[in-house]
Length: 171
Image (cartoon, rainbow, N blue to C red; front, side):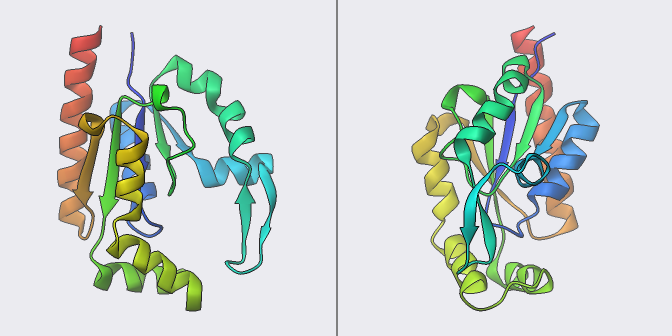
């Protein structure tokens, strides 16, 4: 039985991991957090001193994921999306969070200074939504609000309905 690949993207702190893990659990799909995958496999090409974080080796991530993505049934969670092959995903969800919520979430993670401000600006200017729109067919890219637990439940319900339709139409 064919199963869809779903990308969940958005600025750090918008709720990608919470949504992705719960979605994979409910839908019986495989969940992959690209940040965790990179850490486990040391898929880095350096370290960014300014942002105090490793630099992802995108080519090695693609190589690592290629076979799993071909099989289908994968929920991918990452804050970037322009380096993934377009063929991988059947649908892309960009989570959006109001800055008042996002600021507190990022601050509680220890984000400060330039890293905090740049991520807030990224959300204000819809940087990841625009990246998704430029990287994938517009009809598969959807924005979802991600501010409250109620938003989370609505998003899960909406995505589950989409998955059920996709599976009915593609099997």
